[in-house]
Length: 293
Image (cartoon, rainbow, N blue to C red; front, side, top):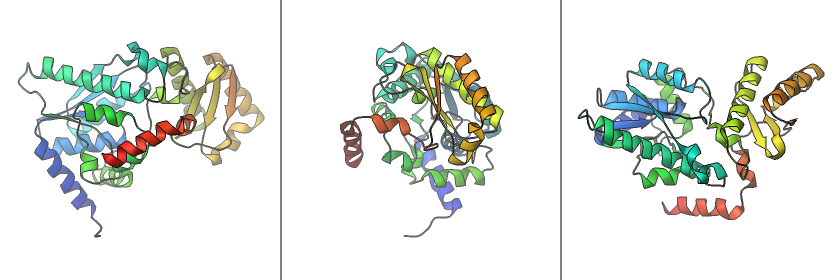
């Protein structure tokens, strides 16, 4: 199997997007959707638009960052208020919470397309997302929502994984090329613990404090039952958070946000650690669905 150059990966992605027609990019300001947005702007000049959800589950500052990125890329940005927190199934936070989130997002984009963009005579032919091939092996119920709404995944169709996406982002000199993944804030809430606006804001404030105070780039504050904060940072950063002065400062700040207990996870940061408690049959059903897709 020959190794593709970054130019070949770029050209294949652009060719796929050109075939779509008018494109609406489900945008999050992360590296994946930013690369798709850049490719859409190049493939369909004047006929593509980025759409981002404004929701309590989105970290503060994300929409502003999205505006800056969209301006840099040269793509119009539409900010849509989403209502996933009004859904009982979403707040219940079972293993398929992400499905209800994405279902709400894609339904909102579709409704906006029909009501607003269609009125302007610039309705979209297809909605696209930033799913890459590495995502297919993880537990991601949101992929089912994408399938239900006929959302296309150009990165997957181009056979691009996360490393390829970062390579393209660097090729296009996008400032997010090395940005860590940042799933929605609700993903920090323990499965089975109700997702509330208060809890996601508590997590957001705690993570922003830790990033600003200790210069951390990648971390998670997991909101467990009984208002326990489980802090995940890279193992090399654990010592900096563990000396007496830092411990006292962290505990004081997180308790002021509403946490009762504060812990540092000695296993260190790992993406998707909340999924470890999901029943094995849930994960197996997802893997089997992937294998037949």
